Length: 384
Ligand code: USQ
Image 1 (cartoon, rainbow, N blue to C red):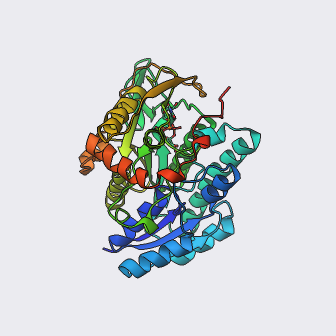
Image 2: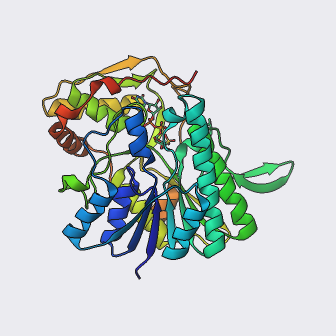
């Protein structure tokens, strides 16, 4: 059955590939985006690896190629009237909420960026909750959360909730959260907002606790440069594996922060799309905050660097890693054992990280080698 899919933040690294993927499945897609990423990239001079056409041109190109229409509205979901009108007119079955400021380093630059992150991420989510209540309480909200909400506790990380026995009585609570940045703190707070309104108004919510994403290819973008998603390799918006691959191509030693034992759950961008599909096909129930951990493999930073070095050297690059003083305040050696049973149960078939996958991405990056700006690679934003 055709679904009406509203994608908030649909011009971004994940939002655009999600829009293409949902459109190619035959769903009706509306993108809302305020161009935050494009504007911030220009303001902080951290441009993506290649130029990205305007959203208008992107959807025109998609229409020409596939004869499918993706609707767009440029606007800010922090403007409640704007969001409410869009939701009222489009009547979505599902809303995918990517429209948050997504960078931990950005949120740690200073007061202006911290304030923006807090306002944008919380008011945007609050407006979404009210727009759904006002229009159709049965709309399924899929909100992108982050594995970083759990932090790196010295116990196994469960999927969203933890059963506690205390003084002979039992209760289930949200799994304890311990953020490592102001950005991650806002992701905990938006979960709390949603959880509150799930309890009082009966919203249907899926919260995807996603780890750092890597990759550049999805089926819809693979052979078409005009459709590529933004690819950042700078310290603010680039995630670690994408940064390492660009560094390998640029001939810059891989920037391992501190001891490099920091371990996270990673996933290929292809699996972000697969997880979103599975969440759409298997919606949360009314009055349910369903939490799914969204990653496919765990790696330490050192392990990732070693994998990139092996792949890069196999195609003739001369890559090494370098330990640099960690600009962040985080544990550099720690226990990490998160559960990821939910998506397995829903049928996810993961795309694992292999030498072949890394080499394929490296080859694509090599085509843009002359566009790499090595000035934006070293970290400048310090946590303390
Ligand atoms: N790191 C390095 N060298 C680098 C860059 C990062 O050693 O050049 C380390 C970081 O210190 C950290 C790890 O790699 O320990 C991951 O860093 P990252 O920049 O890839 O990821 P992070 O800042 O945590 O944020 C990213 C996305 C965010 C998402 C999050 C998932 O930007 O939107 O929520 O990954 S998670 O990490 O699970 O919280």
